Amino acid sequence: MSFRVVVVPEDPRNNGYILHPLVVRILSECGKPNARVTVLTNPRAKGYEHAKQLLQDQVLDTYSHQDLILFLPDADGNDRSAEFERLEAQAREEGVTLLCCAAAQEVETWLLAGHTERLTQPWSEIRDDASVKENVFRPFLEKYGDSKRPGGGRDLLMNQTLSNYRGLTDRCPELRNLENRICQLIKSLSPL
Image (tube, rainbow, N blue to C red):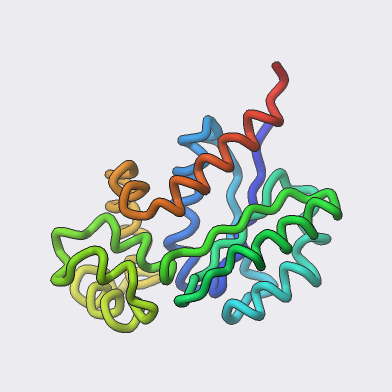
């Protein structure tokens, strides 16, 4: 039986090209290489607060039949852990499995983690930059992306990042933690 996952981003228009291949890879690492991953595009979230509201008002109910819902927003310089605990608890009360993980500081950082040799700043500075999308990612995408592709080539660049998956999870420990949580979930659902 297929494992079905819905990914709730802040903005699927651009983040979907990063998140879809990333989540597919994480699930493959957890023993679900044939998982069906859908990035939520309708309703389309427009920022963190809107995505969080959609999650609470619609997504948990509409997608309760899915095996897992992932909320993968930007941290934007904030510690979202208490909010995430509340959201996950609310989902559990409704019988839905929700895992939340914020990118430090923006989802684009996850893509950049596979291209450190092309970056002009130290990785620690990039990770700490709450405006990494504007300061680092946009110029990087202009130089190395493909403006003729949907998403400007984000999918290609993310697939390059995923070719060194362990390097990605070493540079972005929040992803290693997410992978561990997903693997534990899958293991708990598997018959002995």
